[in-house]
Image (tube, rainbow, N blue to C red; front, side):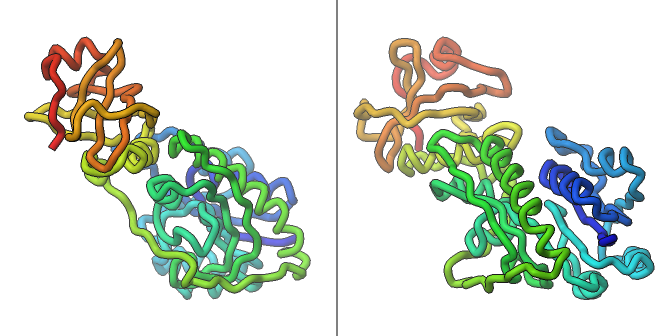
Length: 306
């Protein structure tokens, strides 16, 4: 029986671990993360799935620590897999896999290597993304590709909607590729790194809206950080406007400046880079708001957005 060690977290980790179990792979150890107390946990638990199947689980702060390396060396795994695990594994760990170490990445490599690839793909207005199974090296997401599956990004898809598609793509990709990996017949494709780029992580403050951009660019930001992510925002006179959902409107702007206004019971924003956004769902100072509340807070005249 093929013996593996799995580093995994989040929904992708759960679905890919289930694929390994469905193929009767011996999962000797699962390495996962401790849930962060400040993080909104809206996804499934790898730890609970492993415990359900009697698989040992460890949650080290440093996956490359000496004791973790020793535990994996004793297992002598055929493969090491990483499914949405948030830390890099060094060569000492990777070299313990007799038949190779493989990662499932949430983009169509070589595009969007690095952190939060789903969010970055939406921000850049991509029409598709996907999941890629590739060899792991000490450099992030640059190893040879085993297989990948594409999914569409529709113009109004939010990050969680795209992430769910990518989770499905990851499951499909691993389920298709795993038999050939185990049999030794998998074919590999070298990445052309010049056709993609590396992207870093994002922080809540990166969701600040620049109203000088186009309506489409702002809409892409809003949906890329929509709930359960921290949301796009803009501060007006000490008041935080948090925007949860928008639509790009096919209508002319009311003025030549970025501005916020209400019309016929709906809220709109004229954008400096062109186009009009409809604010479908938004909060003012942490509470869901509508046109009436917007007018009470800022007045009925258009509010200039600097």
